[in-house]
Length: 95
Image (cartoon, rainbow, N blue to C red; front, top):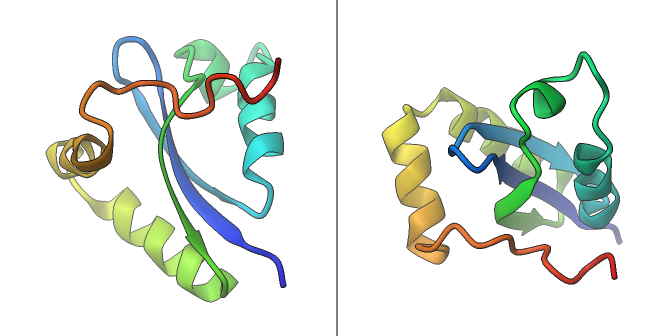
């Protein structure tokens, strides 16, 4: 069985991007491969600051939609509940 992930990426200035994937490492690498016209490239959103895993893709999709509807302050509170320093959780994955 495959896991599904809802994740939040951030820039140095805390611009946020919420997404869903079935391969978190691959997706984080994609965010770091800047494409000129992409949101993540324009705002340098390349730091994984939060993630959750789900066995059922429908649960992951529902959670992603829920988080995307939240106001910014609620997203920040979610991130800081697990990662108050906003450290890059993926640091060391790609050495």
